[in-house]
Image 1 (tube, rainbow, N blue to C red):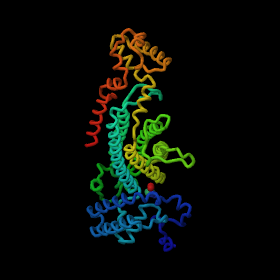
Image 2: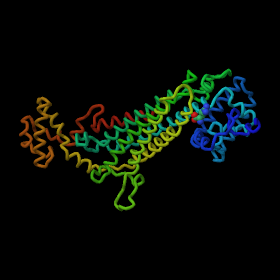
Image 3: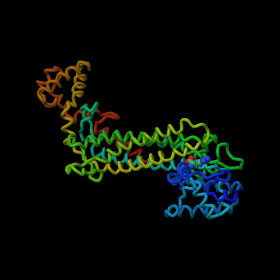
Length: 465
Ligand code: ARG
């Protein structure tokens, strides 16, 4: 019986009387998705082995053998030659088994003083940390591309909207810089989240710590962690850092989705404010005239899956008693898909920003349609001494007249305008033009081209850091 049991492949099978069914094996295994953690797993194991040797827990010769074996495993994985076995459950056991095949007893000593529980927690943190670094770089690339677009359009006038109604004239550059701000906060959030990701769980072992004289600070330093996790139960069991990452990723997708919605509207022939380069669009199989903004539409759609992952991870965590439970294995697919979705989306958007061509005439015509300078006329009257509420009312009457006459405020004659307030003079036409309106909003955060250029300089300085 003992001989038969020892033939089983499971690392834990010596205690069991019967093997798991194939269905249970498939149900409990994670190797086909967690093999993505292989690089982090090897990195963590090498740091652990280095520490074990430094502490005299394993010999220097064993450590050298482990390094030799891991180097070979890394190249096998890179070459696509590594054989991943469902029977070996997960990435950790697959790699350990191969290590033992390659280097014998030294491989079997690697797991001294650790557990898969602190091992997997370490791997995920390494993985998320590197994902954060990628996302932060991509956000910078996207901000750079949007800033370029803003610079080209610092003077391009378009209608600004509230309630989807023409509100006041703005510049397209100013509009792009709004997204640059959003993506800037997203990068800050990621950087902040990284601080809490970057702590080392290894050393917590299964849940209570280990009886070996380990040096956790040493491992933390080797792996570039800022600190160790200070409670072993917490270290192996919480995935709040993954939730936090997914929440920050969800906000990135919120911003991407809002922008996508605008791009789709702007590209509609009804609006015609922009065109998006052909390489980001597709045609219709039935309607030959169609050019569809698929990329922004898909990005808007993919936002839903990232939100879903956030909800999934929150729910995964909420009922778990301390410490590690197998539930946690379910953290990986949502996390990986979040990383893939956000990374691909940001990469495409950074590229697509350069493929947006602006149609200033259409924007201008739209800005002239909705009495976008009505507020400017009211402000003008206030500056001449009229209380704002009275000015508001006078302009409302003027707008009604324009509506009847089918003309813009700027097209009214001085006499026509004076019918609504005797305070109106020749100088009114300077404020009723679109250019006059945007140029007048000349303070930090305002839409004046002058301010847009200052904002661009500020962003470029941030990006250069
Ligand atoms: N594949 C497991 C996971 O992702 C690794 C940890 C397993 N630990 C255990 N005690 N079964 O969470």
